Image 1 (cartoon, helix red, strand yellow):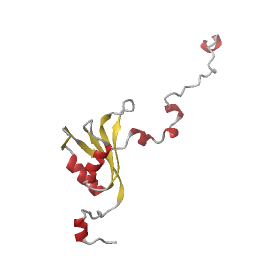
Image 2 (image 1 turned 90 degrees about the horizontal axis):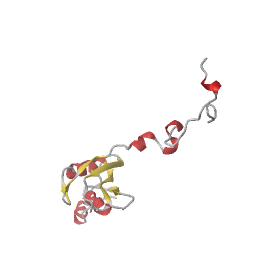
Image 3 (image 1 turned 30 degrees about the vertical axis):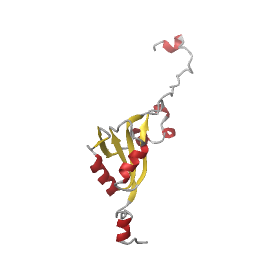
Image 4 (image 1 turned 90 degrees about the vertical axis):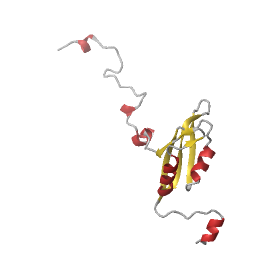
Amino acid sequence: MRIPEFLRRLFGLRKRPEGPRGRIEIYVGNLSYEMTTEQLRKAFAAYGEVSGARVVENPGNHKSKGYGFVEMVYRSEAEAAIAAFNDKVVMGRKLRVNEARESRRESRGAPGEQKRSHHRHGRRRKPNGGEPPTATDTATV
C-alpha cells in the first residue's frame, strides 16, 4: 500500500530505503555510564529502523561497561547513523561508532563444536592409565 507524500510528511513517516534488508550490527563505544538501552535505541531510531539495541552491563553490579550494540535493518540507514554519531559528543562523551566486527566466539563456532583438544578443562590421557612410571617404563633401550 502506497502512502501519499503529504500524509508521510504530516505523520513524520519515512519511505523505506531501497535495497536488501539484513541485520547490520553497529558497535557504539565510549558511551556515558548513565546511557540506557532505551536511550540508545531512540537515538539510532532517528536514522532508521532499529531491530535491537543493548548497552553492555557488568553482570556483577549491572552497571554499564561504557559500550553497546545497535542492530539496524537497512545498510544505508546504518551507514547514515554511523556517520552521524561517530566522534559526536553525547552525554558528555565522544562516541566511537562503527560496524561491529565478528566476535571471536562466533568465528570459532558454537561452544559444543569445539575440538576436545581445545577444551579449556580437557586433560590428556596418560599412556599407562595414570599409574606412576615403573622401572621398565623409564629404562632406556
